[in-house]
Structure formats: C-alpha cells, structure tokens
Length: 245
Ligand SMILES: Nc1ncnc2c1ncn2[C@@H]1O[C@H](COP(=O)(O)OP(=O)(O)OP(=O)(O)O)[C@@H](O)[C@H]1O
Image (cartoon, rainbow, N blue to C red; front, side, top):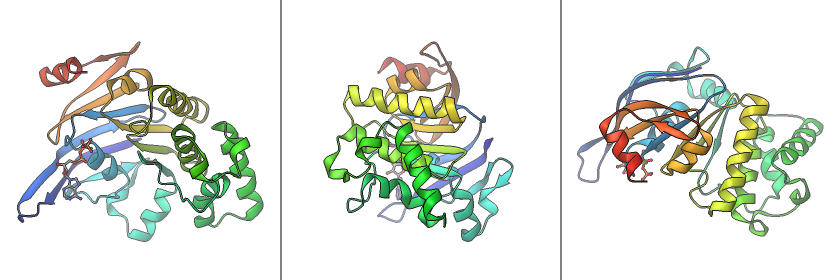
C-alpha cells in the first residue's frame, strides 16, 4: 500500500557540508498494518516519516501510496493526496484558540466539507476517541493524553487511509500512553487505517505494531516482525538496540 523505492534525503549543515539523514531506503507497508519506525535519536525516523507524505521531498527515489506516485505530483495534487494521510504529532499541534470540536473540524473546513457534514463527522470522531464531553473545552483545559486524543480525532476526521504518527506518546506518562495506544489500535482495527508510527520506545512497538523498521544512522537495518509482543530482530545492531531498552 505504501511503497518507498530507494528514497533518500540529505540536509545541509551550518558549515555548508551535506549530511545524509536517510540513505537510499526501500520498504513496503501493507494496507491495514501498524508499522513502526524505530531507532536511536538521529537515526532518521522522523525524516523517513515525513518522506512518506512528501512533507520532505526526497532527493532521490519515489513514494507510492495505493499506486499513486506522490513524488511525481504537483503541490496542488499533493495537497489533495494528503487529505487521505492524517498526521499526529508529539506536541499535539492543536490550535489553542479553537475548542476541541473546532480543532477536529479544521481539516474538514480546509477540505471544503459543508457544515452539517462537518458537525456529524466531528461528533463521530470525538465519540471514537472518547472525548464527546470535552467538545467545547479548549486545549489548555485538557490533560496531555486528552490533547493527543484530539490530535488523533483530527487526523481521523477526513477518513484517511493512512495515519502517520511522530512520537505520539513521547510527551506522555505511562498511563496516558496506554490510553493513546489503545485509541490508535482501535482505529486500526475498526477502520482498517494503516498506521506508521515513529518511536524510540520499544514498549510502544511491542504493544502496538505488527512489524517495525529498525533504523540506525540513516540506514534501514532490517524490517522485523513483532509477534506476541516480541520484536524479532535478526541484525546485530538491531538486537543491540533492543537490549538497550
Ligand atoms: N531540516 C533539517 N535540516 C538539517 N538537518 C536535519 C533536518 N531534519 C533533520 N535533520 C538531521 O537529520 C538527522 C535525522 O533526523 P531525524 O529527526 O529524522 O532523526 P530521528 O531518528 O527522528 O531522531 P530524533 O528521535 O532525535 O528526532 C539528524 O541528525 C537531524 O539533525
């Protein structure tokens, strides 16, 4: 469903040298999968995630989602394609002057939905993330876990095929983390939304993912299955990564 073919990304450092954040990488993520991107800080996880929806344009290679080549699209076509790709952020990125319901409505307004359809979809999404009673609260009145569930409802609102989550639980304590993970799991199971999640927390991969990529210094070491909460890494550095947890 998501195919990365030899995508790579370099950045220029302050002293004008080029630094490779993602070496040429190929991988395929199946429809309905929860797929992890795991590795130490600086491994290139977030960059790889942002290559999937072309928030970062790859220097080489291509990104295909459901057979559509995102890397060949114009900015206007990309904006359209990104409506089927939700995003969830570590720091939630909610609009502080909008209520919970208005935050969830935001992508639907941008997409030009009519008011009645927006209201119905917002109510539906708030129910899914169990925040119906908070619809008229502002982000500052919510806990971290609740804020992230608003972020998830907002990502889910336009009926995406894919949700990209960048360290969605890293700002949360273990109990709130659990509620956010079960919310993502439910969305995956009920709506078959494919989820790609960046995390440095092995426990997140173990609890949530079907498979995970192990990344190190911009390289994809391997794609490991996750069976019964165990990450089945084969590579040496992969096993070392897991031992360090
Ligand atoms: N826009 C940018 N300009 C310059 N360098 C960047 C940029 N984005 C990322 N990098 C660098 O690329 C490397 C990979 O960054 P990335 O954020 O993808 O790693 P990560 O595995 O997600 O790590 P972390 O968990 O620390 O965020 C890092 O060394 C980072 O400093």
